[in-house]
Length: 411
Image 1 (tube, rainbow, N blue to C red):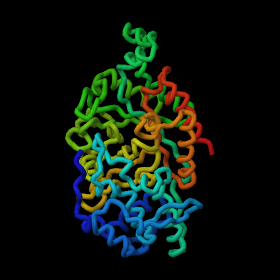
Image 2: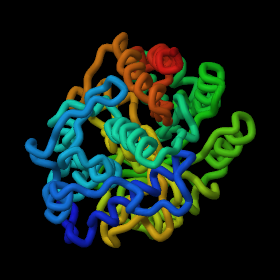
Image 3: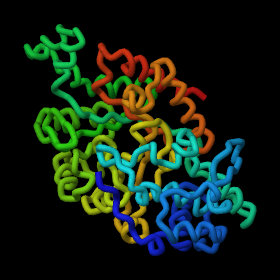
Image 4: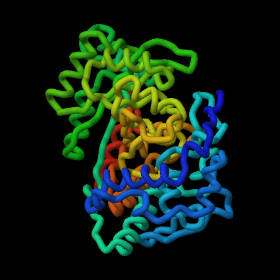
């Protein structure tokens, strides 16, 4: 797949741009930032940072990387200890824009990331660096910066790729009764289980789920889209029932092509018919050089795509919402789009090319991520597809899902 365009780096991320972006992030999450604070309120940029962001390398060189221990956790810090510039590197998605690497779905691959090189994908590096920065600012300015939402918040979501073809899967797995019942019209399709999924999450966590419905159906050159039509009365009735009975959040699962095409994304949001719906793109396709502007142009205000398909962890080094950076204008988007990062999903653990993990060990992976989030504050986002919450799925089915939810909620 073609690489993202390389924008002129000098214009994109000079010291003032980096400082303004990080300062806005602090204002979003911390109380106590003075209303008149500007770039000069933050520590000045180092020459190493200015040199890096004036060029187009995807990653800092090993000589620009040191280890800083924050709250007992060793984390990498770049550019001679420049906290502001290091945080900007993580949150902005710099490495993805300036890397030529793309996989067969057009995604930035985990193997090309600095997380893979440094072995730190399971650590929210940007959040630890932010803790170090707020400590330094508290000392320097003799004030108190306090996190607006301390502790761990949990958000559970489900990408609804299939609703109508569970009977075929049931037949393949020897569950003929479920298939025959569906074909005779005596019971719903096994994948038409959204109410049961919402109830499971409500009972296990006391919270609500977010359901992402695919905006197009049929086959695309990149792979299959939905097996249902989002605009049909049956699917719309499911959406209304989820909202009415469970208070579920409804989002759009942008189909193949929509992450590059604002008109297509706008059409799919219209089909969904839910104002202010978050967007998560199918197969986590997201190009930081293009997709932020596509989201803004389509009228979307929240994206929840940004996780690695291949690894559980922190693609942008954070468990906190952050503003998507527009590399074409060297600033946050004029019509802001907030990213709610994704941290863990079911298929990561069963795809042999990703992070294959025995079912019994998956809850511990989730608990490890949750421990960092609980310490630093933020939201752990978990994705579990409805099509795996069926009776015949034993590896990443309901038992594993319940164990994951229990593990992340356990102090």
